Length: 229
Image (cartoon, rainbow, N blue to C red; front, side):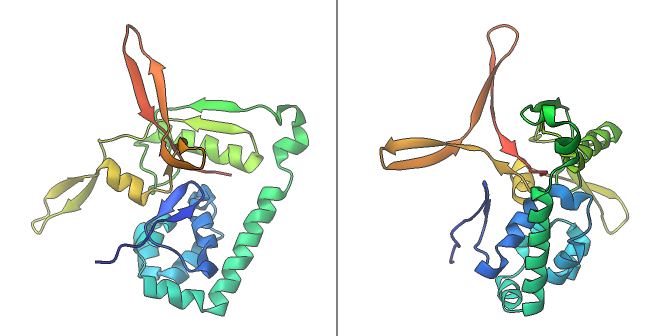
């Protein structure tokens, strides 16, 4: 069985390479503004309308759409032209002075740390369960729209989530979701630090944060990131 080499997309890895003409898809899928802005919805529907309707998760679609379909779209001038237009619009938006830069220039060099136990950005990132998480997610969306320099810090839970399905008799079944499944299907990435083997050789290792707890215990956690420009 052939195994594709991972393809780098920012600090995240795709499980197989994208055709060069479609590489902007990875950047669009990691820009979580698609959780509330629908400017790119039609593009993902062109990629696979059934998968888009079922998942509404661009990152997961890039993992699962057949490679043949990707090759077909890479050769489709209408699709690549629309992809280039949307990528240019994304970059133009990022390069425009934000509301915060225009109206609050004093905070340009500051960073706001926002702590919450959950963030409701969308179903693709299952780190929320109720109204407080949705409210925290709305704070992040507004901060993005306003250009506020904010970093949200929360937890990527290892367990506790499950998918509900019905059996043939209408009974409810609960299928637990593992952390590995969440990481593979969610538009987030594990942060890494370089570890040098020699002056010319290094490898990436998970970034680990150590936090002191009451008493003598130390909590060590790996770090993942999700991007809302």
